[in-house]
Every structure is written in structure tokens, then in C-alpha cells.
Length: 91
Image (cartoon, rainbow, N blue to C red; front, side):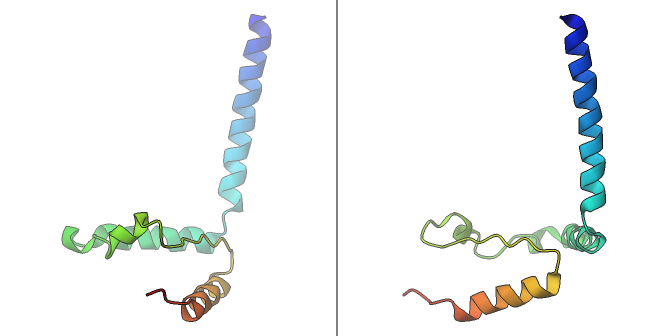
């Protein structure tokens, strides 16, 4: 019983290592570099400029929030701009 548990632990550790390496290799370099650059730029700002405007909108249930996942940053920006321009404004 103990030997089986040890084998399972070894197998799970091996699987975890493989999946971690796979995830690191499959993130496109452009996206990784962009996120790193944005993070560095954010933390280089003075503390008073780090506050996001309109943070109350993040928890407003009457607003819709969307997530867009893409490797193509240009296409993603086109989709976001189109969505913003064509959104109906509620009064």
C-alpha cells in the first residue's frame, strides 16, 4: 500500500514537472514579453498613479465584463475597438 502511494506521488511529480515545462514553452514569447513589460511599467509608476480609474465599475452588476483570449494582439485590439464603438450606451 505504501509502495503504491509512493509510486503515485512520483508519477504525479513527474506529470507536474512535464506540464509546467509544457505551459512555459507554449506561452507565445510576444505575449509573455508584453505582460512583463506592462507589469514593469505599472510598478515603476509612482504609488498615486497606480490607482485604476473607476474601480467601482469592476463590481457593478449592471455592467458586462468580457474576457478575450488570443495570440494575435492586433486582431484582439480590433475586436475590442469594434465592441466598444458598437456598444449601446444605457442611460
